[in-house]
Image 1 (cartoon, rainbow, N blue to C red):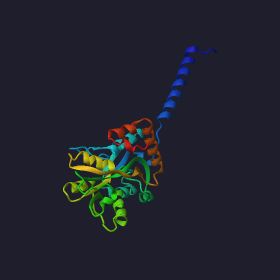
Image 2 (image 1 turned 120 degrees about the vertical axis):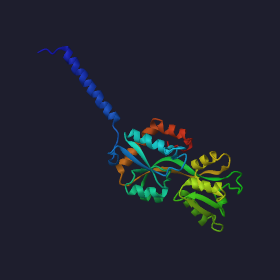
Image 3 (image 1 turned 135 degrees about the vertical axis):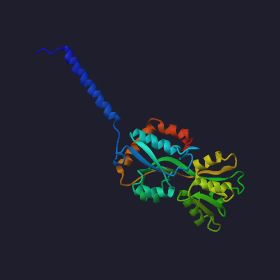
Image 4 (image 1 turned 45 degrees about the horizontal axis):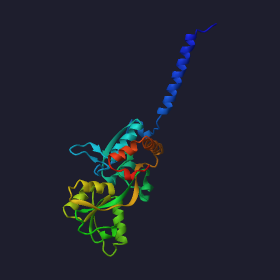
Length: 271
């Protein structure tokens, strides 16, 4: 029996469409994890650390590097990023307890933290020293902090840096360490004369100086650089792999570079 050519053409077209659709499905496939099954990535963050994460002036809308990057990664994974604002020193406990899925909060990767949770590195940042305009104390290096009042946010790498100084170079002339629950409170202590300097991540120090209308300045910048990491529970291996792939895709397609440029953080690029 002869088969009409029109029928053969239709079958060929159908097969071709099916093949293309299957190929597209493969290209559009995204990794997943149990934590993403409800379509939401719960991100824990201390949203008071501009320009990394902070609330837009006059609103409760979070903005900043970590916010943009988390949303871009979640979008690629076809889920929604939901941010939970909490104290920095509560973040690891909240992650381990399952209250959040990941930490994105300018958290420096350290050996101690890496014993508790896993990290995906995404930005290099050092520490900076913020002082009142004029740098009355003549602070040009870490050792110049000996005998001074230094304000920091609690449970940060800067606490460890001051402790190391007090055990070493400043052993005979100890730094008076003043800790605060949020970095803006530490900066305010400097602003009103209750501290001689603030130690914080360099991007945050630069941002605070730029917004101070000339009242504050950066005395020392970007020493002891170390990577920020996205914190993930050690047992969340599938989620960690999904986030690593999402981050790499953003690096490959230029989105990562665009986000860093938006927040003037290209010097910390992890590409």
